[in-house]
Amino acid sequence: MAKLKTYYRIFIKLLLFFFFGIGCIILITAVFPTIRLFSTDNLQFKKRSRKVMCYTQKFFVFLGRITGGFKLKVYEREYLSHLEGRIIAANHPSLLDVVMLLSIIPNADCIIKASLGQRNIVRNIVNTLYIPNSLDFDHLTVECTKTLAEGNCLIIFPEGTRTKADGILDFKRGAARISLSSGAPIVPVCIGGNDKYGLRKNNPMFSYNPDEEFLYIVTPLPEVNPSEYVGNPMPVAAKKITMRIKTDIENALNR
Image (cartoon, rainbow, N blue to C red; front, side, top):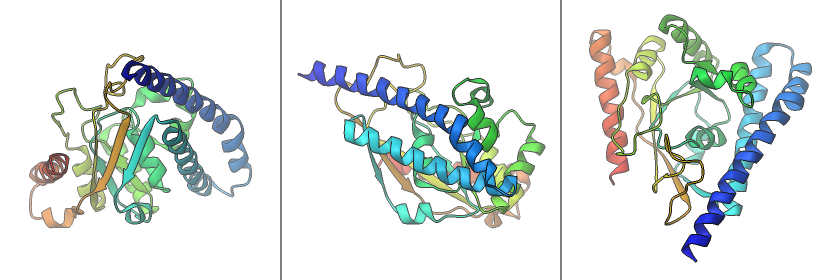
């Protein structure tokens, strides 16, 4: 019976990926062109498109829940869904972390791995709405400051890639530096739950948590305001902010 459950969940995982791909094609070929047609400028187009992305990710999460692919539990959902001009700095345990956050935050922008902008299915979405991490830091800061000033929330995974199997967090200082440059506060977000084997980096495609369906628990943590660190040189302030975010998320994961 346990093996049958695992095989079923692997099948559901692959089926959800298939639906995700179909959804991307529909967005690219029909939804986004229609939104652009009825938008007066690029700012309005992006605002509307981000809301559509939120709804599509909500539907994807709904499919995952009713099919038994995964569960999502969100603390302070209302708080997260009404944030503006904040940097969301989250740990990155699995492939679906950004999907979970996009389903919760309707005005979410995101720094995305540049290689995703070269993949056939998602590249038009990534290149249309989000900020690639391949930009030089000055240009990246300008783009991030601009989107935050527009009232968007900027999702950043300070690890830069998915968490390693040992669970040790290795945070880079990019989120802190952008916060210091833009003046935007950081909301650390802990993505917890159970083992994400099957969605972690370098896991086989035909793999799944052998014991239970994936559980995602999303928890916002106390806000970090860069104004608290203005008396420090930029490198020192960035290091302190990064350590604070990392420590807060680690403590939340270990509760």
